[in-house]
Image 1 (cartoon, protein in one colour):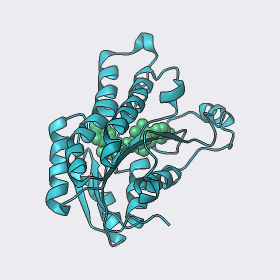
Image 2: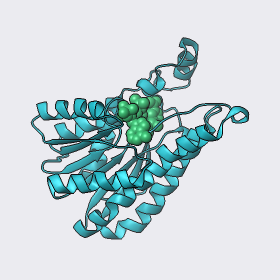
Image 3: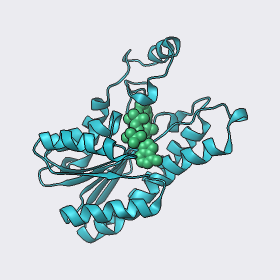
Image 4: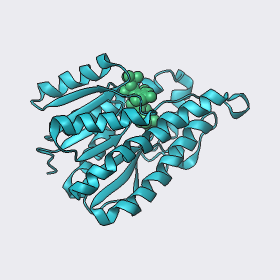
Length: 247
Ligand code: NAP
């Protein structure tokens, strides 16, 4: 059984949805946690749940698109815990629109948060991992980063970018005993997908061989495994958690 006792993990965007489920799963597995949100209140809420599991936690406000904030996050983590073992880049947004109507801001914000945000946190963490001669980086991408989706050119481009980033950094860091992987969820029940109309939800569900929408905990289960030493020989991979939606 994978074990994260005494490990320290950072999860970005851990106030709700998939990030919250990942933070709680890693804490259940033994890790002390640094959790972030765009508000202190959001981060504190998950941190309080982690403390109920008898793990230590640090709750931080973070806008991942700002490199100085990513650097501050890692510095605060090291000040509190003196090490960092696992980085989960989960924070993400959608700004959906058809390409002909897509505004510059919709494109820029999505790329800044999803893609540059992932780069920022990896960049801020890597020297620590190299010094420690070990570390795990798990980036949350999406199946639509692999197959594309009408109305989400910005989001799909950001998620495809995360896949290229994951593979490149995996190649650079593998000789240093640092594993870098991406997890690609399909359709998961969270705030991000709550505004789907009944019809849209029905037709999307019809396209899922398993015949249902996934739960955040089902994504968290894979992230937990990839965070553990059981996964030391897995790097540069994109693993789908999607009920067979994309094969
Ligand atoms: P969600 O419920 O909307 O939660 C998004 C999280 O990201 C929140 O914690 C939010 O913090 C945080 N966040 C938003 N903007 C941020 C910023 N600028 N800097 C730092 N944190 C920020 O989303 P979710 O569905 O759990 O998605 C989590 C990840 O999975 C995302 O990367 C998403 O693209 C990916 N994903 C989701 C699905 C799905 O079906 N749900 C499918 C494929 C991939 P606040 O609470 O403070 O706003």
